[in-house]
Length: 232
Length: 232
Image (cartoon, rainbow over all chains, first blue to last red; front, side):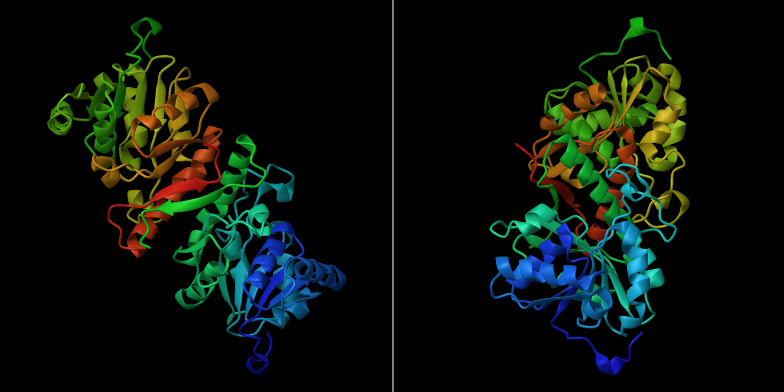
């Protein structure tokens, strides 16, 4: 864990695995909203290429690309958007780049595809959820928040349309509220208070349910979820 | 299991535990839609009293009340609306009253309140879900379908308002589609194809998430859920 003095840029958002469909979608949306975005990847050149793609679609984007550990050190908020089977290794790989007070956001869903089974099913995780697995691997002073699992990559990347989806955000109160404030940056996304991190186990499962529905209803663009009856 | 000859009334809907908040809410709504409703309870007199309450609020209701085994024999569709801790005992109790081809609908959610823990948490069920536990106890020729877990009892009972909620329905195709056709009887309820019964494990967990949100947002009337992007 880095020293507190080298505190990461409070405005920037790092997205590890920002070269993937969902991570790139978030990068596009946050960049379009005017936030500084740092894309991380295992290979720096792939991250640089993804940053170029964001700049191509959002010409005034403040976006750059780096290898994951470098990207991690450049932002206060670090979003993990790697396939579940790479989640633990990615957290272990960036441990030393994390500093106290940073927020690590888990989007991971333990889909059974990680072991060759179907995407509409999940694996049981010893810690209760992928987010709690991430928490178990993160340095002590780093907050882990669960968010964005159920947001369609296709809809994120369709910049002309709002993303009609609620985002259930779980974790300790302070960091949870910081991540909730990211949602209004993306038109159509609404933050819903998901309580403690342990609730991530339910939110992660919903992704598998949505994938099954996408298959049954033949909706490659992907469904979203809304809660009815919430106060405005 | 009863003989095929004594086939239950195809139009009637039996609701075991129809004296509870959610079961009574469904009874009111189905009765208001003109369907014959049979309320079941462990005590016949409580079922008769609940039927009287339905008739009081829906004056032309075709509703009656019976002890659970009698109620079970009177309808093609039998909805289990008892607290989770009574679910297995109720199924065992009505086994001999069930006949081949009947559909048993599980609304059960294994909330941790069953063992004295909180309502925003669930218990792990050996069979995967409460619905699959019901399936494991039901006679072979009886179809088990999972539905209605996330529909607010308060909103069901408020007959002047639509119930803004999607109902994810899981089970084998034929019986699943029969239960999906019940949803349009209740204004605002929409049926969503939830695929095989094993998906009930996710749908049941969503109830615990909604209960936690109801507590955090102080919404005693209860949240609902909608999926965005479904075809009309």
